[in-house]
Length: 462
Image (tube, rainbow, N blue to C red; front, side):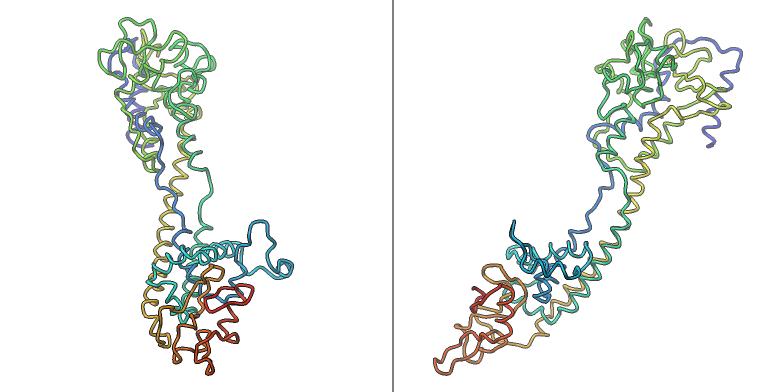
């Protein structure tokens, strides 16, 4: 137990046993100090709650590298991940069922996304641009195929290993609901029509409700405690404002209900709303520490707020909370404080999230380093490619109809000079016609034919 708590408990115990203790009517500001302890917890539920840190997505940063790697992959291997038209049976589906899966479910899912990116000319053009290339010169990357594959595999393995560490628990919406419920008893704000959720199911005056008579639980919610501490009994005249503002005479508990919604807004005078302040694990922990300091005890009785040593009716006695049987040897028991468990759950999960996000940040930096190494390597890819004279139609990476986006070195043969008309670009020179023509026996043309499912011309069209 902290020194401050010990001093508080000793002071209350001394007050309880002192023979001079006598009834004292509520006064303005009596419970301002106690409200200061509860205010941080009350403010957690203000406005639209924003949890921090937000959960980051590891997948997005790796897709470009996976797509680049897919574009350089063997055509037959890459074809396994090509999406089939809606309702169509994939070619070779029966044979495929007899083959082992080409990778883990996570790998297959990632490769399908990469293949779809490659097969969309606009999307893949954007990917290439990030590495300083275009579809027209992307074939220069072929000599780096192995290096890029190694970097992509390493980055993917790092990412997937991190995903297994992500803590499971409540969703953001569920955590926000826990906060609202801890404070107000339901997923919303203060509402006197939901007095049962606040902790006061019966129709009772302030004295009965705030001293845990019948079925009431005055420490069930943060708002329920504040309602007891900041109002006096309905028949007190002139009324006082235990939580301020000084001179207020309408801070009264209803005849048989907690204070109304309009009065609640006035009661926030000494604990103003903070609707735009993010909720963090540290903020909740600080709020919990402060809120628990509001609890005092004498013998087996629990007290919250200024206690005159005789009662808590909020009229002839101070406007405090008394809960008999909720202390042991003058030490508070928090079993009835349902808000505590809820806020501790949120705090614990946000703390786990904070650690997970710190780990994610490290992984993201590692992946970014691998991506930068790929970019550094691709800057000099042309030096690894045998020099050839290029015409307007440079070697294409994607065909005109986007059916094959694998990096194949093809050209428009009809536009090439004799010196440029070579099999490695899918062409041969016809000595009879003195023209450059497509070479149907070229490995490039054959590869394109396999990828598109039929014969192709020099531009990759059927």
